[in-house]
Length: 249
Image 1 (tube, rainbow, N blue to C red):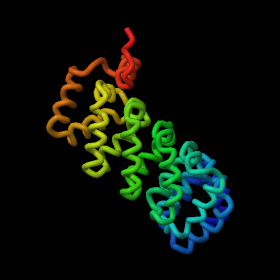
Image 2 (cartoon, rainbow, N blue to C red):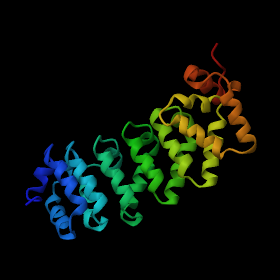
Image 3 (tube, one colour):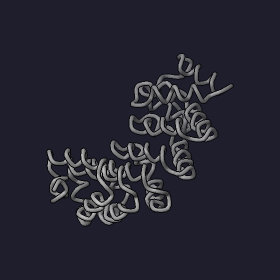
Image 4 (spheres, rainbow, N blue to C red):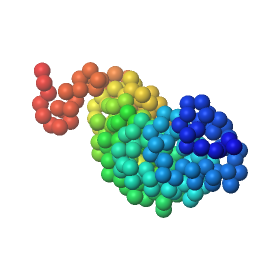
C-alpha cells in the first residue's frame, strides 16, 4: 500500500519524505515495483523539487542495472551538459556518476568532458564536475585535470571553478596534482587570490601539502605578500601580463 501511486507520492511535498524513509529498507521486489511505476515518468520526477530526492534515493539503494532506463530517459529528454546545468538534474547526474559503472556511462562521461570548462564554472554544473573528479575512472579524471590546468586562470579565479580545482588537488594522482600546482603558481598572484573563493582556503592547503622544493618556496612567497597585487584587485593587470600585453597604468 505504501508504494501504490508511487509517482504521485514522489511528487508530493509530504509523501516524498515517507518514500525516502521506506526505500533503504525495501525488498528487491518492492524496489522493482517502484522502478516499474517510474518508467515513463523520469523527467517529471527529476523536474520536481520533491521527486528528485526520491529518485536520488532509489539510485543509491538499487542496482544500477535495474535503473539504467533512468539514464536512457534522461538523455532522451536533454543532453548531459544541459542536465548538469539543471537545478535538480545535476543532483540525479551526481548519483549516476557515483553508482553506475564505466561501461554504462561512457558516452555520458565523454559528453561532460567535452563541456568541462563551462560546467566547472556553472553554479550547478560545478557540483557534477566535483563528483566526476571523485568518482570517474582514472583516465577521465586525468583528462578533466588537464582541461583545468589549460584553463587555470578562469577556473581558479571563479567560486565554482575553484571548488572543482580543490577536488582535483585532492583526488588526482601525484603527477596530476603537481601539474595543477605548477599551473597555479606560474600566474603571479593567482594563489593568494583564491583565499576569498568557495573552497579556496582548502585548495591552498592542498597546494601547500603537494608542493615541494621550488614550488613550495614559490607558494609561500606568493601567500606571504611577495606576489603582485592579488588577482581580485588587479585582474586586468595580471591578465595583460600573462598574455604578453603591456600593463595598464
